[in-house]
Image 1 (cartoon, one colour):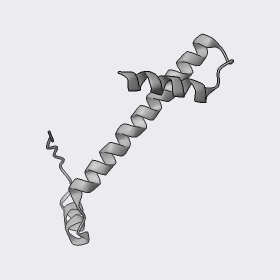
Image 2: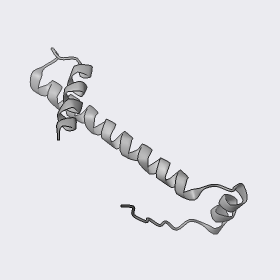
Image 3: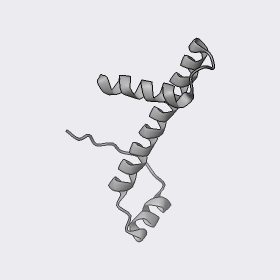
Image 4: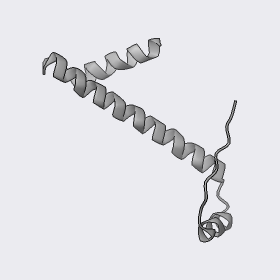
Length: 75
């Protein structure tokens, strides 16, 4: 299933987009996908920092991130 989103942009930007023959849907979709990925990465970093506080410095960040990813993939 797909959803439709909309945004208001200035008239000048719309003219520039039309003049540049930009595929707005593709640009928006890519930007949103990248933003979601970055949000997930940030959450993983926060989870890793939280776990580090609980277990001390004996565990490397990469190990914690891998464990979190494995746990999330199981869901």
